[in-house]
Length: 153
Image (tube, rainbow, N blue to C red; front, side, top):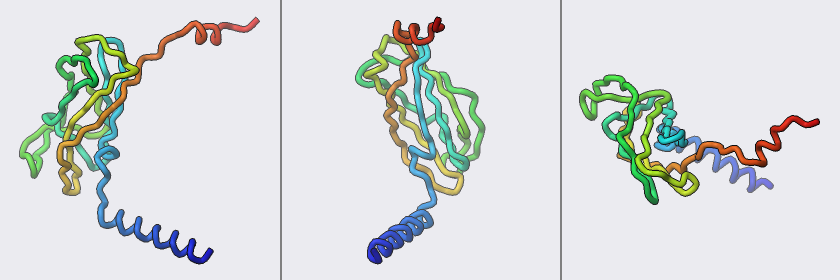
């Protein structure tokens, strides 16, 4: 029992030292992304952690295994004089990007591959990174759903 407590204490200290030594979030947490299909477009939402930002000019999108996207509809961005890239446009907070679908897709088997790059205000600029996001298809009303919603006598 004593050795288990000692081991748990040691692991806790290692975690605290690691957090102190590397205060930056991994990119998947700093730039959390999700996607869903809405009609003939995909809506990609980034929830950018406080103190972090994404570069507007560093986005790339594609569908796997197949499908064609139209031009990304980017929201207005903020101007920033970035110490790494000079004058740039960035996103902070929650950002929604619309991606028109140019070909039909099977949302159950399609993944949006989103490539982006961002930085932490505290001085870390991440290399470009890729997130693979399975699509969430719009809900379809089936006969079972309709029967469940029917008023009971």
